[in-house]
Image (tube, rainbow, N blue to C red; front, top):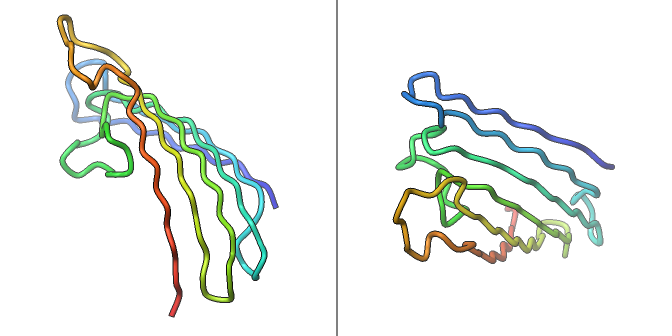
Length: 118
């Protein structure tokens, strides 16, 4: 199976213009039986005030104000076990004048998940 996904975020309580975010993704495959595989890709943009950063997701190093890519590959090892490898890369959407920290550079995160159902 293949599929497409989309998401739109709009913080109606934010002041200013940086109050939106969106994501577009696609996948192929499934993880139902031993030997199954699934690949996933997503591109997203999250503006500075689109989400409340203390409670935002923690998959990315940057929680807001970023453009990001996600690539995942999953494999069903056994009846109740699957393994997923993730690559996540983010860059700042906008930079403040004079900002010269490492957060100006691409932020990378690699993640490996072993999921066991019981």
